[in-house]
Length: 132
Image (cartoon, rainbow, N blue to C red; front, side, top):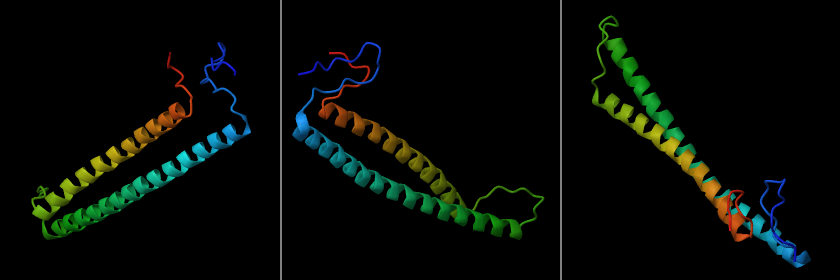
């Protein structure tokens, strides 16, 4: 069996020992299966983010309509703050949805990083900085 030590001049992760044709086939199937799993999970998260972005657009529309109605009803020179409860609620919803979308995008990115790391560890690869 080959030694899985990394080359001293190469920072790449060490390759596992040769497994033969059947081993390589199984290895490839594991990678394909893992990527299919990631596509399914990533697709569901992307759908969730898309729905929230659509809801965010609806909240922007609600704010725009109410602000426009208030602007038409009041003298534009007064500069009065928005006090309508529906506008306040829509503004709060916009803030919440923006934070939630940013959180979900970051969570998806971290999940992908962890997902690939777990797959690499499960298939016998080591992270570039790991020492045994």
